[in-house]
Image: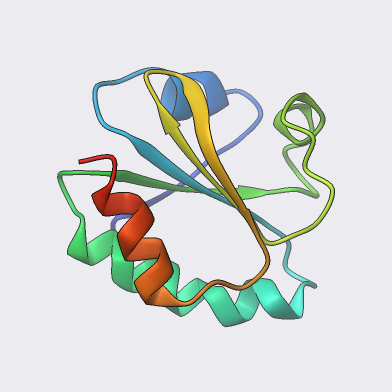
Length: 107
């Protein structure tokens, strides 16, 4: 997970809302089976898009404020932020090609 930042309550704004790159956020939990299914895809994409898109994981059991702020009701939820604003939201396991298509549209 060298290319993925684990976010805390304290650094969410700094890691997700600030900066020049688009930020792809995975809202997940340890106990979530579908989250474990999408994790290798998220990891693979983080390597493919290194330096172009920032990849961030938010454990919903530990980082609760953004969960409420962005209305996360189901996990995994993937959100793409650009210029500090949420641009796209995908809920559930997604195919890698669908995620690539989304990411490419913001480059």
